[in-house]
Structures are given as C-alpha cells and as structure tokens.
Image (tube, rainbow, N blue to C red; front, top):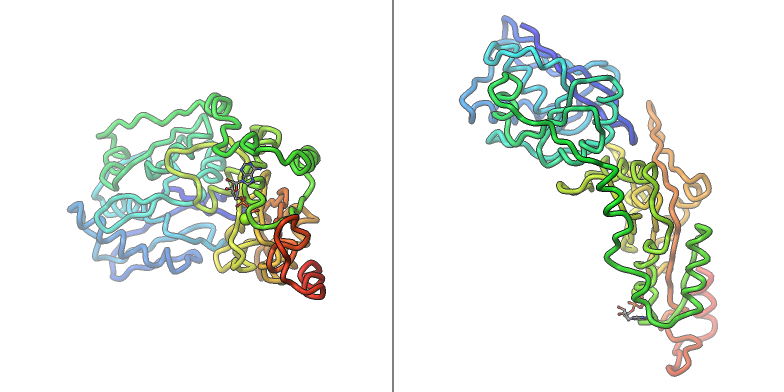
Length: 377
Ligand SMILES: Nc1ncnc2c1ncn2[C@@H]1O[C@H](COP(=O)(O)OP(=O)(O)O)[C@@H](O)[C@H]1O
Ligand SMILES: [Mg+2]
C-alpha cells in the first residue's frame, strides 16, 4: 500500500514543500530515495525504535520511502515524523484520510517523543501559501509556527499524540497567537537600555547620530571606558522594528534554530557579539548544510565586534562584500543561497596594545611604532 503526506525543505530563508511517499510491498529491505543526507538516512533507526516503543511494528517487507521532487537535496532529521506516520499507514496499522491535508515535520527520539526542529517559520509560511489545512509539528515549535495565521498549527509531544490526532481519536485545538498584539505589547522591551549610561555626552551623541542614520561606528578607548556597555545598549535607541523587519529577522533565527520555545515573533532588534576566535563560515554563513552566519543573525540589528584588532584578518576581509551588498550569497555547485545581512556594524578597540595611549592619568608603555602598527591593522 502507498501512503503520502507532506514535509518541507528549508532553502536559504524559504521553504519548499516536499512530498513524502511510502510504499510497503512484497519483498525485503528498506529504501530511501530522493537525495536525502545522512541525517535522513539514519531516520530508519529512529523511526523503528520509536514505533517499537509504542508497540507498533516496523514492517519486515519491502519499504520504499521517496522524498519528491527527487532532485532537491533534503537535510536534517525533521522527516522522521512524516516517514513514521506514512509507514504506519502504508502497513495498515493506522487508518486516516488526513495525511495528505497536512504538512508534517518533527524529529523522533527513540522512545517516541518529539524533538524541536529548525526553520519552522519558513515552513509554516510556505504551507499556508499552498493552502494546506495545517501543520503538525513538535509542540516546542508551535508558537513559532503560529506567527502565521489561517493555518491549523497542531503541536504534538509524542508520536502517539500525532497518531491519535491523525486517526481522529484525539482532538487538539490549533494554537492561535494574536501576532500583532504580542508584537505591539512587547515591542522595544530591551533588557539593557541606553539610559543606563552615565555622562559620556560626546560619545552618546556620536552613537545617536550613527543610530539615526544606520551608520557603522568604531569606539576607541582605554579598558573600562564603557565601550562594551555602550554597544550593548545601542539597539534600544534604534527605531522600533516594523512588522516586516521582525518577520525577516525571525525567519533567519528560525532557520538557525535560535527561536526559543516560548518565543514567537522577535520584538527587539538583534544584538550579536561574536567572540574574536570566530571562523569565517560562522561569521558570514555557509557550511556543508548552509546555515546563516552572525552577519545574517544581526540582520536589522547590531553586529558588535569587540576588540576589533583581535579578529583574524581573513574574517574581516570576507565581511567586506556582504557589507556592501547588504546580503550574502553562498554558492554551491548546484544551488546558491541568499541570506539577508543588513546590519549596523559597531566595533571597539583599545588605542594601543596596553590600552592607555593618550590616557589622562595612566602611562602608556607601548613604543610609538607599536601604536602605529596596532592602529593600522
Ligand atoms: N558611562 C558609564 N555609565 C555607567 N557605567 C559605566 C560607564 N562607563 C563604564 N561603566 C561601567 O564600567 C564597566 C566596564 O565597562 P566596559 O563596557 O566593559 O568597558 P570597555 O569595554 O570599554 O573595556 C561597565 O560594566 C559599566 O558598569
Ligand atoms: Mg570591553
């Protein structure tokens, strides 16, 4: 018998709907087709254990799982749940007509519990676009998915709950969040506020001008002058996020799996402060399974490079192009992915290696040549 449902593949900050088809027939062995990566290939073992722990059986016949369209690469562990439900249905262990009306995503643990997944917001946006009835996914991701309205968001905690829901034995009310209201009520509630800064009128003025125009800024001063403190409080004087900006930024954080379980739409501008040992890929994005980097995570917010001269030269070089284009393009042999990267760059540094060049009270111990070399780095 054949069973079919839908999943979703995240590509950049957008999602594509993927049909998950399972055929259980005479024969032996398990086949998985449709360009799956290793994490999906391993799903067989997770699915099998999860089914067994719930007293279902994994068919000992020929099982073919196909992820279509077959020419798009699929990544990650979130196909466990649709594969499991399709196998159960195709082997006649559950009875349902609903599988084809939903997009279903979730990672299974061996005892049948569901783990949160990445990229829920793009998946949910795409599901509504294609007029699906709803989205069945791990409960921890439900609030994030519920940013999108007119789509039934069904959060489940275990495979059993998903089975009971899809068979009609369990009623789960779709989660509804009034996104606009939550957004308005929490807008601009920053933990660190610019008003905490005492005195320092000149630098405050400079940062206000930078914030008003979205200019990049660098602060040079001795240790303890408050550079880090000022930078952290900069997002609080930037203009409030618009709903659109909030959506864009949340999408990127969603793809990176950085939206918490009780959070939905981001209501504050991001502030990212990567350590100076950061790699090129972690900063600009990319990797085997491409992920957004720090410059995209700070989209519509502030990227703070504390102690700028400590950063590797190459790291600063790779940022140049994204800073001009306000987006970063990651090219692979077959695909290229775009992540937005429109951020305000704020950097801080000491005026010289010892930190006290031109200090009113303390003596600088660096020779003149050293200071020059440090500043020109
Ligand atoms: N203008 C200021 N107003 C309030 N607190 C300040 C000010 N400048 C410095 N501080 C305090 O000094 C501490 C050290 O500042 P920090 O930002 O770490 O300095 P830097 O990064 O320049 O070395 C801060 O945590 C803050 O408590
Ligand atoms: Mg500092």
